[in-house]
Picture 1 (spheres, rainbow, N blue to C red):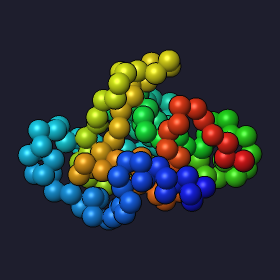
Picture 2 (spheres, rainbow, N blue to C red; picture 1 turned 180 degrees about the vertical axis):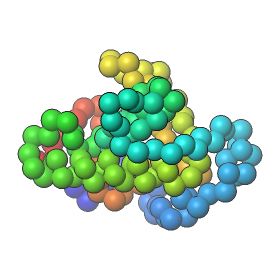
Picture 3 (cartoon, one colour; picture 1 turned 90 degrees about the vertical axis):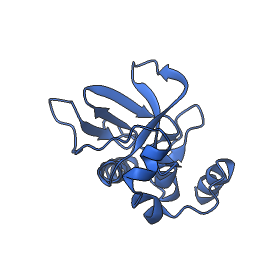
Picture 4 (cartoon, one colour; picture 1 turned 135 degrees about the vertical axis):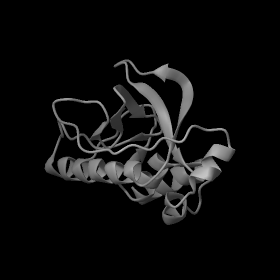
Length: 151
């Protein structure tokens, strides 16, 4: 697992990722690059889903469902084992923390939506992928085009 995470970081040119540094990004830096900085208050999703976190790689923003395009996280709604369920809860909590940590941007990828109608976006703070921070923390895997096993 560690080798896979380090490989994913190397592919993205992120040999060393100072998570704390990009969490402290000033909003002016984001605006200077011409990106729209997004700041909202996220909590776990309930019955009404407007701005909330579904799981470690999916959230709602102002009524739009977004799938983080560069990662995959353990399932929380239908885990295959207890280990996946526990890691999925941790990933969900961490994504909530990261989204609430300050302004972030959403970058488009080669396609707008997945087959479930979720918008595919890479979440960035100070040019660094929030998803890759979760990979570095062992809470996600880099997206390979398919789901891996967490059991």
